[in-house]
Each structure stands twice: as C-alpha cells, then as structure tokens.
Amino acid sequence: MAGEQSHDVGACKRVDDGITQVFQLLGKRWTGPIVSVLITGPAYFVALRRAIPGISERMLSDRLTELAAAGLVVREVYEGPPLRVVYRLTEAGAALEPALTELGGWAKTYLGDGERSGGC
Image: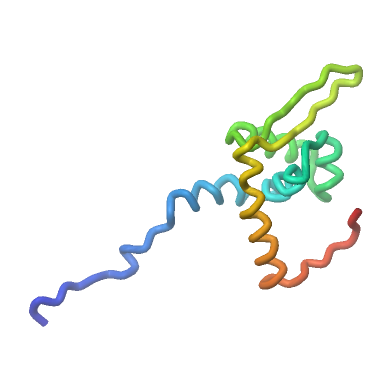
C-alpha cells in the first residue's frame, strides 16, 4: 500500500506529567485523607490522628513532612506549656478542595458507598 504510513497509536499515548506528579504525592497512602481533614480547617496533630483511623503517629508525621515540603501544608508551633503544633493547608493545598470533592463524589457513585463504622 503505497503512500500509507504505519502509525502506532500506542506510541502517541503518554501520561501527562502533571498527573504523574499529582499521583506521586497524593497517591501515597494516607495523604488524601490528611488533606481532606485539613480542608475543613487547621488541626492539631492529635486531632488529625483521631480523625484518620489506622494511621500511626510516625506515618502521620512523615506524610505531614512530605506535604509541607511540597508546599501544601504549613506547620505552626505554639510555645507552651504545653507546646502545641497546628497544621493548616496553604493556598495551594486548599486549592485541592474542588478536585477532592469531585473524586469523593465519583467514588460514591462508582465504587459503592464505602460504609464505615464510626463517625462524628
């Protein structure tokens, strides 16, 4: 077939760099729930741990450090006694709210109700 060029459709498809970056950060276990809790407002470390069942103190600390390094969370220390540490979202972190709300709605529609025991 003269004049026809072979074209590999798969070779043209490539994941968007932005999507890769988002999921490298937010795709880590516990990161989404931490941001979700902080969207409702600043929280003390202990309150975050209580709000996210199953997370260890070490994991919470590690994820908060990563989120701070990424510019999504700010750690504010209030001298005591007792010493208190509050975490809050930066403007960039708070800007995730619409995307997380959409993902939560998608999950309810397509992944089931995800019933969990407990609540407020």
